Amino acid sequence: MKLSFLKYKTNAHLRRNKAERISLPYKQAMNIGIIFSVEDKAKHDLVKDFIRHLEHDGKHVKVMSFLPRHKDNYEFMFDFFTERDLSFWGNITSSSATSFADTPFDFLFYIDTTPNPLILNLVAQSKARCRIGKFWEQGMDFFEMMIESGNGVKSLIDEMYKYTRALK
Picture 1 (cartoon, rainbow, N blue to C red):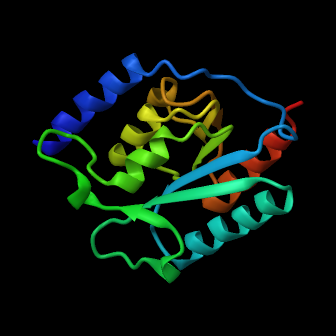
Picture 2: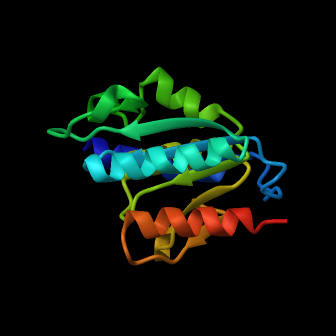
């Protein structure tokens, strides 16, 4: 039942969100958001490497992760939210997650190879100027830039980095 309400809320956020959507040149972008689902240590390490690349380029990076049941929160480096932060009515109640969605990032990277409905709710609420995620048919309303990548998380991150750096 919660997920039905969540889907309704997500669609409402997509309709009502009037944030300015533009793609800045990569060199001008300063504030970067990364959101992802915790899966395993390898993905965690790939996200950390991506953050290091962005910070080396002079970007300020803020990260939010979704922690599924029975998964480890490696190193407790990132803010996170869980299914327990979803109310009966489909609202995400985590203050750190809603604050993340309200942040006007220049780029927001969604690093999952399959869509997660809780994260998509935050992406729909996001005030980010340019939201970037993996391509899938129903994702057109969620992202300004979608990356076609079928070779896992590392390939997705590499392609996201490559194409955003090419923005002039």
